[in-house]
Image (cartoon, rainbow, N blue to C red; front, side, top):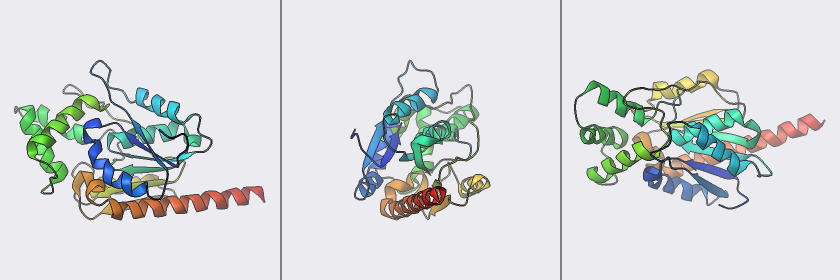
Amino acid sequence: MSDKFDVLWLSASPSLKHFDIPLLQYLSKYKKVAQWKYSQTKDEAGSLDEAVMLVYECLKHCDAPVHLIGHGISGAIALIFARRYPKRVRSLTLLAVATQPAMTWHTHYYVQRQLYTISQERVLATQVCNLFGSQRPYSLIRLVNALSRDLEESPSLHSLFQLTNLPRGGVSMPLMVCGSNTDSVVPPPALHEWQNWFKSEDKLWECPDGYHFFHYFYPQLLGEEILSFWQRSQYQLVTASKISTL
């Protein structure tokens, strides 16, 4: 990881990281982007605290706050970090993150496992349809295997025995929340709930399609909106700094 960067992209889902690449490549044309990667071992307890502390270790020596961005459970980690260490974060961009940050695709998976006596493979196949619709970029078997690995590798708080919630609310720095009109994990009504905690500088953006991985299918469309948000938040920061020195 480079010592100097403007943007830190959090990635806590190793088996799904391929879907981040198109947007990462687009943003990297205009900003210095670094990736923070995390994989939970089978022996670790389901907790986000370890991941948050590792993000802090990554950023504690940075000279200036960074733009933080994450999708799904990675976005939930970014949100928790931004609340705990606000001076380290210039802005926060959340992709497919609900106002209940623990509400990820894993939640839907475990609810279905609790309700129906069907195999994991059949539930995961249903999840593939919900997450990608008819735009599946890979075979059904490959995507089912990727989701199965994500259940083991990402720091989900949920299990077959218990679903966990996290605190709701906003953040002190500029916040951008992005979602898709066709996402069943964070559908539009759930996405709009963020406005209950919005400040004047915050932004909500909805992709017309793309389901849960809209950032994979529409990287330029989303990337342009994110760059515009970062530019505006930087301008507001400079303006506020000038006012404070008057």
